[in-house]
Image (tube, rainbow, N blue to C red):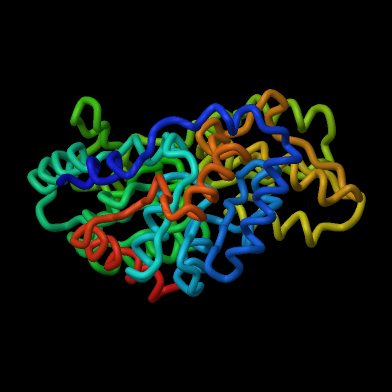
Length: 368
């Protein structure tokens, strides 16, 4: 059975209508009752970008890797991951065989992770090795599928997060002359630029055309960026920054490094989700912030810091559509299935993929 079919066969159809017809109060009451009944047998991590209606029940909140590590440290038998597909995969890779990971809604994915599939990546690796020989170390953002993490692990590379990307890029460049950075070109470009690699030494691999996009001499290339991006963070623009600067020159602009190079360069600060949260928490009362990241988190920051003026850098931004798939009906459906001994939407990464992906994660964690 293929890895993909194994995941598909673990689904249990569409959400039953009965859950759509329940009141919010009834769903919340049932969820609380199940959590109380299951106690330590249940662990529910919630990613920062989730809806408040889900986050209120999370046992821990954080970014994807942080939550996967907490799952591994927790002895709960059942892990209901309130995030997206690749996050639940990472949790399954890092947890024991006695633990089962569930994703309440299998439609909860990541458009960025989907921009690099294993077939495209294998073709790219073959072509790039034909051009450059054995001079490339692959790195992948943790926002990638288990298959891509496993590919990187097999080829002596590692995963990276937005917090440690610089450390991992510097490490990779001590091993080989070049890196292949998957699947987010913006995080790769911003990180490589921060370590001193000029833009002129960065090429882009287009997985749709199977072509290397670069106009200079090939021998000058140090970084090969996969042509992928976050559909949310790419919507923050230079024009957004110009409008904020004109309207309120003292407002500080802080963005995630998944934003384009031009946006990061014009911002006051750039960093991971945790960096953004910490920066605003430490900021002086009365300070003003325009934040370039996912809207659920921005709204939560606004609610948690009434002593500060916080807005979205893009006033027309909406929450990430795939991150918003998990809601109260799906969460309750998942929990009641587990309670009845028929947990659906299990995320199970096959043994070889898990072992190879674990190598990529371990190489990063050793340097964390």
